Image (cartoon, rainbow over all chains, first blue to last red; front, side, top):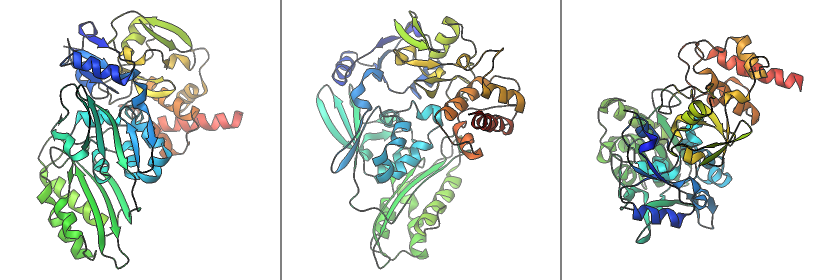
Length: 288
Length: 155
């Protein structure tokens, strides 16, 4: 069966407050942002009869604002909009790279950062950068607002810890105090565009004058039900002189934090091999 | 009621608000140039411009497009008077079965109109969301670059 538009009830709030109120009143209603995930499922006929809260009229959540210590990206900002923002380009280049690899232009022009998070795919392209930038997700619901660190928002495959009636209003990225010595985002898929990743890496590394690691933030996507920081590898690297042995040591700790599976896109063995290589290349400064 | 500006003309749609934009364009407004390929946002055959930007019209319910500007392949040229880009597709063999062509044209049109670069890599990136299953991409890319060259010569 295909999606039947006559079976749907559409609510069209004109403000954030109205959106929250409508969602609170209609339990089980589906919030609609860019629709790049929801409409695929709807087209298959799997959401017939549902109530949809169409957020396209909520202008205040489309803005990106820059403050002294952070950048706040409205949940309805699109991947295309994020790529064009001068401060995000300067301060958060890994997020820009990730947004440029989401689907292709048509998807980047519609898909939103808030929608990407709420959809909670294990392969969400923006998550490894959001993870190493230590993003905070701002949520709003019938019982008020709360701020949730990016790693605490995901509950599993396609599941979040958003409470019933809660919506994402913004994603906040703290501005870095010091630019990293090097940073990298790499998505590995079957082809360059329109593919879902087999593995995906984001890393930031700060080195001291003596070549020791003063800080490392390393994340992988598509290797677990949710995005994962490599806590064990980061602890291992901290304070250590960054040489080939250190890089190999960090790579050996990969499975302390990730647990890839065999699925339609790839295998556990392939994912681990490629991910170790990505990590070692990054740590040794050999990235393309 | 949903109000749209389609190819410069004001239109309204009184059907169910969750009707997909592609169905509004094809079934209601009889603009059948826009094609449906996959129906899941992968192939780009249904690409139209929404406020000037390429989007997949199979993934947009009409309610989300309310008040906005839509451009379809019918806005480019007519059979008796093709646009430079359409002529170039004809000249360079950029179309075969034709299903992907309207989407290819709209993505390419948007890229050229917004001043996008016309080297091979930039054109391929601009067309990355449009899949072609018969000609391969060589002649499509050649068509776009050819149209850009002609445009700069005739300026």
